[in-house]
Length: 235
Image (cartoon, rainbow, N blue to C red):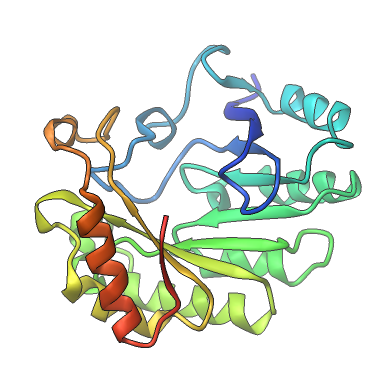
């Protein structure tokens, strides 16, 4: 049975400046407690509906709407874990549509597999910066998070792919200026976006009891990054 994916046939927010379709592959190698994609992290839906479809169904929709779409986003979970990703990206590119990849930066070897072939090379990449590498145990992983981020950031830059960085302003000071300082070395002149945490469907249900991050908290983090010479922005 073909695994189901999350699918949004029209998005105005997932691909900057473009009307896009977005595919969300299930499975993730991190367990960020604040993650709001619980179903994707835990392996995905078992039956279609509520935004989950077969991969072929998603491509049928994309093909029919290729003249109105400005691109296709591959996200997750962690899309680089999917054995279907390379074929899926090349399939979208054959439709003449640009591709954006969202990644947590922990799989540089798989990222390079995409980057080194024109038919699978993303046209835009969003690299998530979770927390300071010294706190990686909080992400539920034994991966050398700092090394993986450094390799992924270098690959994205060396292959000349337009990109952005993304961080969440977490509640209760769970992401602060110390995290910004620790992550800044991975960031070049491309935009580093800071956005607010919003509770709901979190992987650890206790995080659903936190309030959304205040705009002032997001602004404070962006200013801290800007003070380090980064192209920091609020989203």
